[in-house]
Image (tube, rainbow, N blue to C red; front, side, top):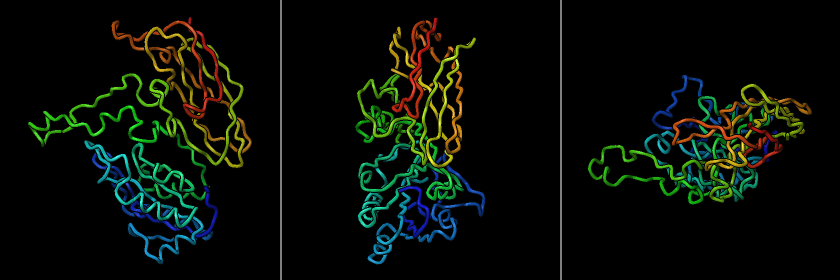
Length: 344
């Protein structure tokens, strides 16, 4: 579906004509006159586009006809400073009424794009298979609408990668037993006190993507995942020893038709650890803009500390001698090169 090169775009949803931001320390005060909402950003794209805004949480019969005839429908959904803020666990599902609005738009027009403003994972299962595209827009700041319009129109290729695992449901997340947890004793004694006095990380070392293999859970979208309008081919991987560890050298070719950025990721996987450790951990990454058909070289340094673990009994960091796999990829589950490094 993306990018949308021309035509009539209908924009709707609770965040369509506002600049969404988080509450509390996530607050953002735009410079007066510099706000660019998603609708304003799309409206400024130029003569090739006819952009129309529909307000409200429900579509009238006339609005339904407009949505059905559009070349693209952009539903801007998600959270804001009232529904996602500090000292408060928001709902995993989108706020009330948003899934229904997305469903109504998707039923009318198969070219529906959902844009999500959120600071973390959100339940997309109600509409994931019914819409043409999903853009995770986070909280883009005062000119986020311009950036969004650049992505939708293809002026810029998207290059973001997920900084966490998208499990796919609240129940699949290993941390779910402690979500919304309130200490009843503290809350009973002083209801005005912080009802979340501490956070429980029951996963131990296996937080996030580190727990995928440990808990045997297949995520909907893995850590490091992100699509592009181009494609990338990895080759010529090499581990070059250095005085403080090694340097991971490899090449990435842009195999698509447009210039695009690729965030290449390097994971370290101990093969015979002396203590319990995750199967692999991110230890380096680099992001480069690669022209159409161009091949560029990445050089990502790793020090011996990147192979270390914390010895709780000795109160110090240690490095096991032995073999390590170096995994180079486009995400934690899209490994393109597997290299070897021996620590003596």
